[in-house]
Image (cartoon, rainbow over all chains, first blue to last red; front, side, top):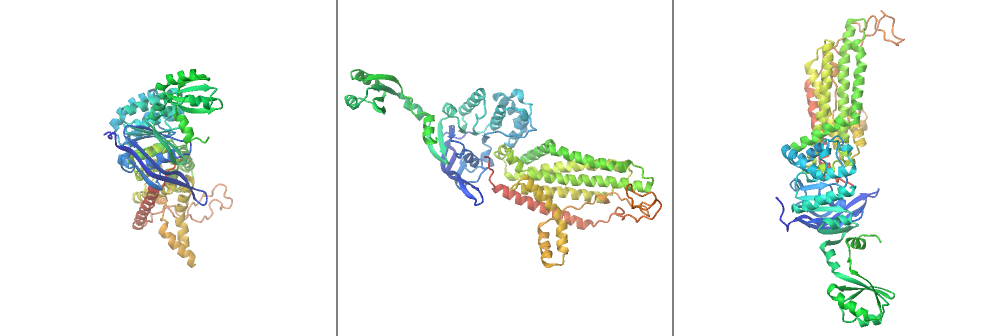
Length: 312
Length: 294
């Protein structure tokens, strides 16, 4: 049964998790007071640099780690066998037993997920086909390339048709073709009503697939927004003006624009599309030179990432 | 139950594919090869020949069973630590599976592999016993096999329990120490000095009685009167008397079995109890511990 759209599939409240290190067992906080909510049917990206606390958060969600404080729930309750049955998890690097062939590994994981032997047998060929691994079904996984291994990792997460997919760096180590395949599968799964929570470093992948982004730095959420918010800002226009000074600015008073950037006698003006024509007409009457006129790029996901998470 | 059996089957397959298991099998094969000359060399005395052959069969089975116990300790010590270090545990515990089910599956898989190895050893020994025309003493044989099976249960359970918190090397080493402790405990308990005796008594509660091997009594092999008698001078033994001289008789270890079956049954039951306690403690620790992946 797929959860209703408004339902919170993942809910994290005030999660704190520390690790102890050294002789004095000094606590090092991996996650501090983290709050997060993922609603059914959405794709939420969990973005942050290495060591930001992404894997710790996912590990706590899946019950690998016990939180120091806070509450973590899947489908409204703490991770237990009933809720984990509805989850498919792909680790950052998929490790399996070297003696398995691809289809044997999937049989093992499918059965562990509670599928009957018959269901597993039926489910394996289409999943391998989706991953482009049909020809490798009877090959030992130890002979797989890194990319094939990652795709097998996604296959085992999808096999039991879970409602929630938790993907840790799903495109890591994939070539462009493999990356595209995985992103297409993620979008397909979203279209099927699945909820997807993925951690990633690759912002272009996030922009192409996700509905929401949550940025984490040093264990704390520093930014959370719908990706549609980024597209909305590109409705404005940029006009580059040379020989800019205060007198010119006074001459433009009353027009709908803002000074986006001022560098010496050069300025970049920002105006809504409907004011562009009037502003340009006025500028041609003034002792200035008009440079580039282009649609304003707005703050991209990368700009936002660098602002909130980047070290610069 | 299905999931436990899946884990158990996986352990079994994993054991079959581990390179160290092939070294173990090679070791066992070498030990049997060592016993083979005894089976085929002509001692020049039929009575002695029979005794030596019978002892070669029981000795081989005894060695095989010891190796089974060693293997179960080795596999138990690697049960959790290796899964964590290789990160194969991630895609298992993220499924609808209790952590205790994971450990029970591991335990069952190790038992199955070690006991199957024991069965192979038994059938090889049985075949050899037919070849030398010897009869196993059924009750003693069953007791000896039960001791091995319970030792596999006990030491693999302890090794698994220790592997939930220690590295494979440490878990294996500690289990081996516990396996050798009963002799130390007995020595301490028999010591008349108060502190040693008390330490022995205390340890006696913690350390299980462990493994008693009765394989040397599974085929009665009484020596002929006079021991090796004529022609019994061993090769390279320069101090041995000349042929026909007096040789002190070898102790009659393999005459009629002298086994206190009720006492042994109690020891076996106690060992099973210890195995259950150790394993339960291991499960309780494993349920609470963090599984760090990075």
